[in-house]
Image (cartoon, rainbow, N blue to C red; front, top):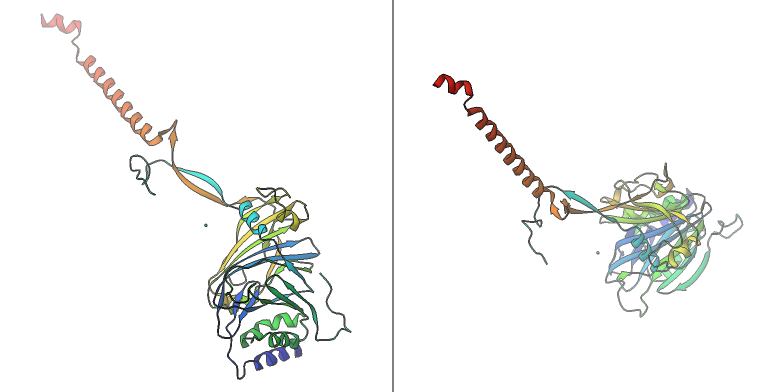
Length: 368
């Protein structure tokens, strides 16, 4: 409680006499641009791998704005290692989980069908009890990222890193970070700088890989409540079984778009990005989509658990097609068949009528 109160007071004091930079939340943390510039996260896609002891998150952000630099802060439950990821991983998973084309037939012709057709032209343990309370436990440069790994038990470490790099922390973030400080999580603080140092951050950023010990998989989402616009999350989970979020945490019901076992050769090109993440072992892949129309309602992190069954699923991509028999529209055959039936029935009735009007031999005899 003392640490949480200290964090709130210390971070709030940074705002006195300064211009507050807006924070743009994403599921994996919060992004703070420099000065009066702006940056927003259009899309967040992450791959979570869990083997029962270690969790790995590979994340890729798609951003836009006019900020040449920004700070990105992500809470993690234990000491994390950080490295650059392979962008090919996301392409492989997108191909692997793409909806399967499925024909859905209709009987009567619609616009575009004959005769109405009309041509028409995208892991280490927490600090020991004797460790100093303020520690920067790692610092490295990874491509466009300047990464600092900070102990979460002292808010001064986060404050000093931000001050040294010329960033100001929005006061609202102190309140959002309080639950993580209470649980003694740590931070991965990342400074995003374009390679030439001048162009604004825009488009798909290089993926980052975070790896840490964890006895149950979790995806940090609490900081997303700071977002001012609706958020959307795409999550790939690789584990021994089919996985699901424990609850919706204030968003729409999570939607599973793919579930099934995959092997090292699952990618269409047999590539190694997926195999490198899974260690070449077969795993169960679950793809989850979720939207957050009202980010302020987010009330926790995504805790992932095994689903009741390992049932496979793949989203169908329906393609409406006119039902045909031997290339001939079924409706046309039915109409022609009905006409023939009516014609035959009419002809048969006419024949019976003529036979009924034919005079008998007794009738001719009495007529004479």
